[in-house]
Structures are given as C-alpha cells and as structure tokens.
Length: 254
Image 1 (cartoon, one colour):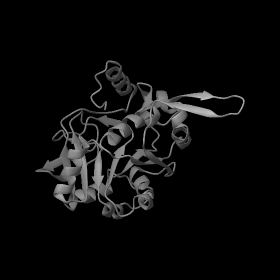
Image 2 (spheres, rainbow, N blue to C red; image 1 turned 90 degrees about the horizontal axis):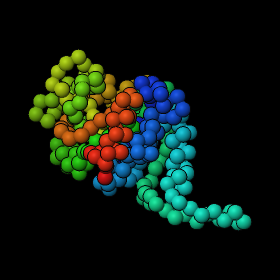
Image 3 (tube, one colour; image 1 turned 45 degrees about the vertical axis):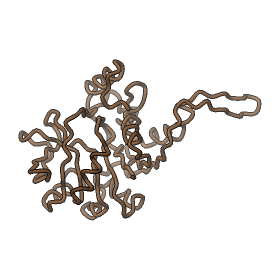
Image 4 (cartoon, rainbow, N blue to C red; image 1 turned 135 degrees about the vertical axis):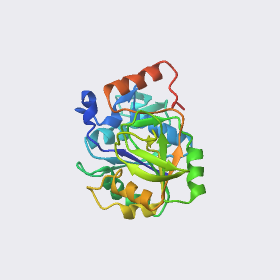
C-alpha cells in the first residue's frame, strides 16, 4: 500500500537542529527519524513511499539520492572511477520525493499528492513520530469498519489534537484541547481516496477542517494503540529517543 510521509514543516520547536536540516532528518542512532518510520512500514510490507517535502527539501532529496552510497561500504577504482558496492543496507523501498510547497499546510501537502495516489486506499503519517504499532492490525481494523479515515489514537501528554471516541467512532476532533479523555492524534492514518475531496488547497490544515468534517460525517474511526508512541518535538524528545536506541530497548525497533 502507498504511504505518504509529511516531511515539509519548519520544525521550529526543534531549532537546535532544524536551522540546518528538516526535522525528519534529525538523527536517532545515526539515522534520520524518517528512516526509522519508514522501517516500521517496510517491516509490514508497505514499501512505496511518497514524501511530501517543503522546508529544506534538498536535504531529504540528497539523502535518498545518495542512499546506497551513504549506507554501504564501497570500493572506488581511482583509475577508472568504477565503484563496487559492498551493500550493508539493501532497502528494497521505492521512494518518491515531491516538493509540496514551502508554505503549504499539512492538508495542502496531502492534496498535492493526489495524482500520485490515485483512486487507492493509502497510509499517512507525520515525519516526526515513532511507534511500535502493528500495521497489520491497523489495516485490518480500517477494512473492517468501512469508513473513510482511520486515525491511530495514542495516550501521551495532551498537547496535540484530541479525539472524543464513542465506541470506535470519533465523535469529535479538537486540535490542542485543554482537557478530555486523554486520547490524542498519533498519526498512522489509513485513508480512502474520497478524503481528498475534503481538502481545499495549500492553506488547508489536515487537523482542522478535513478531519473535523470526517468526524462530523461519522467517517472518522479511531484505532487505539496502547503501546509505545513518541513524537520528536523538542531536543528533550530527541535525546529520549536516542537514549532508548543506544540502550538497545527502543520499542519501535524492527
């Protein structure tokens, strides 16, 4: 299944790193966080990625353009210029990199990828959050309820879009509330192509009108993930993820 990764934001709350690189390229264990997220999808067989770029798009483009050489040992014959690769990370992914506008909002970036996705169910997540989510169960849940959108609901501190859940249906979607049930938007969406019709254009914020409309239509369902999930919004978040990885206990590691 095709996977959209949102990787175009400015990452201002992680300015210690993001003056030079986009937030999804901040490393954990020597690898960009984006790579960690993609590894989770690839582990479950989802290896066709569409990366929505914006801020410092060239950094992400260069990483994937030179991915094989950056992640392999190789021999260079300086006489002929021939390169023999001794591959150490033979990722069999197909990665499409699309500049979706410097100032585009999250919904606008998704809308710009409509022609790449076509009339297919697709997966979507942010480029700054890792989880030990079972994507087979997520997809099975989505197919079972037959609605337009599934969002993964997680349980960390309430500083993101909160989900009011009745049964498995999302009754209300609120961006950055003050209090409530404690379930928040953790990304890792599964979405039907009809959702594109709810997105107006570049200025549309995914977490506002489109998801609020889907909830009001009864078309937004929540997959509850009680396991590990963490975003990388601050240096403290990044250091916490690095510590987990270095200690060999990173729950999202596959």
